[in-house]
Image (cartoon, rainbow, N blue to C red):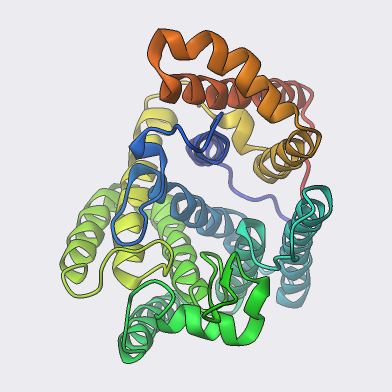
Length: 355
């Protein structure tokens, strides 16, 4: 099979995004977090709300660099399809396994089937199929249909409020108490990585597929495309708010614009000007870093060691110096730094785990 195209800028940006995931997902204490490191409670877009869509855009970029060249070089599309679906299944299965560990070790009331890796797996599968079987114009058409169709569904649902929006109602009717949030008294549920909102997440991934095509062929167009996406997202947000929980169409365009701009900047600085590819060591083993760190945190929470470290090390010694939020941030940064060490070791030995 022909080799995929590799850009140091993409590995670096993917790695920075994974490091950001570890940072925002693992504060020392959720009671003490700086506002920019929290998701919006509902409508809006904080810096933290950019992290997951950045990763999905990069998933699309990676497909454009890894799968599309093989299609162009005449590789068997059926074999490529099997390869994409098998990898997507592994990512999804890994997410299900992590949630099984959470349910078992933390003695949760129920098992939650939806999650970050599950969403990545589904989007990888669908975007991979689009890369293999659809021409660019049809890919753009899919993006347009997803954005307008999903927006129309949300508006037709009659409410965009928590619990009452169509996405939450559909998920609740299908999965009930298995969702991330469920109120048995009202029968309302919600999951930020639920089924219906994955339509918006898929649009983000397909935008990444087109961003990868620009990176290969006309990288200078990434910046004007970013500006157009930001303008379109900002205008659409006047009618359909930016909302990560629902992954609204305006949110797709807005976050996609920032991701395009980030990709353009990384390409200019790293690929063109030869700046160091900071973050690369996380980027070349991204799923390994995310899944491994998640399993580690679950084990530490189950044994009480996470809480012990927070109270007896970071909270006790750092809170008097800079406050509890500062201490919580330092613990999160320390966690990222600790996970950088095995990622650096693996990269030096050219160990790259392909989930």
